[in-house]
Image (cartoon, rainbow, N blue to C red; front, top):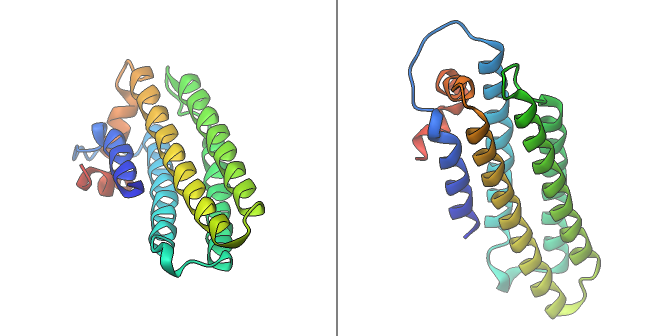
Length: 178
């Protein structure tokens, strides 16, 4: 289920990533490349973690806690990176930055939910409940990513960001996932 959400979210990014324009790299293209690189690294790591804990019969409190810590590390890195990106230098740059800030806030809130579930984990029922919370929060994170991408697309009235995604090689993997 999480993988499906990742594919849907990445497909939303791919809306503007299918071009082969070979123009000089602009600051907006570099921004798109950094965004795609960060987003793919984070989603790949969360997908890997999800696969590691997908078999509930082999889970223990230690494996869930380890997975939670790995997710926290990946998520903190992603939040730092997207907050550091800011918005591209376009007419819609401020709207994009606001969208990324909202995404970062939502991802941090969901990570706090995971932390709470892991802290409250006790016994077999606690492991199962924590695993469910992790899955639910991961799904919510990817939903927030999808919403941020929609906002970015809607804000890009001049098509500058769309063109940057076309030009950014780092977005090629996203294009293939469409």
